[in-house]
Image (cartoon, each protein chain N blue to C red):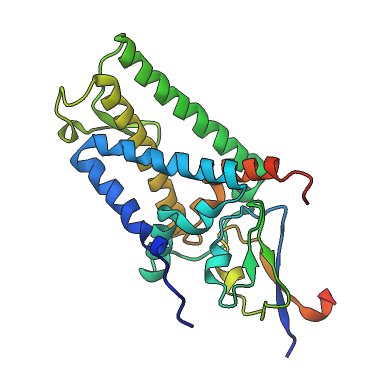
Length: 194
Length: 67
């Protein structure tokens, strides 16, 4: 059965473009805030996960890679990944690393640390990324945030691609920190409405 | 042939919406962003949702077991 295509079914293009733009000019990384703020606003205001359910371009990208391009083994995910302790644990870890990134940005803002033109993959590997930034384009902390934020986005994409290939295409959705966070917000908001 | 029906483990559902997207009958909704709900009146038991579910928490049960 042919399904109706909506405008938002094309958002995977934006997600793909975002990753490419980070190689061109790191300041585009700031746009990634849309993927953080929109789902939170939707869950807080509307009390649902319409972002995950409809608009998430990254999820669409994984579907495309896994289903259309057959890059997924399509195996069931191990039960521990969908367990509460892993999902909440990963969210906690992700938040700690996110605040660490904000702290590094603050250090550059305060002048106690100089701008690091690197992208850190998997919170460990520092990749030289100086080609995507020319000194003096913006104030150093704004550039530092861009490098840090892009690191977050690239790391989570890498993990998502790995689990897309190993398990079902959208396995990332199972432990996506934004998904877990918005589900928690929805739970809190709809408490007692069973 | 035994008629089937999709059943979501609500406790384990991550509310991602993959099932909702593939359902050919629009039988699935995630009204409160916490878990997916299947409308048994619309579900034809095709199993597309169970196959897609990244968390692997949808099972196909027989209609008789439900009744």
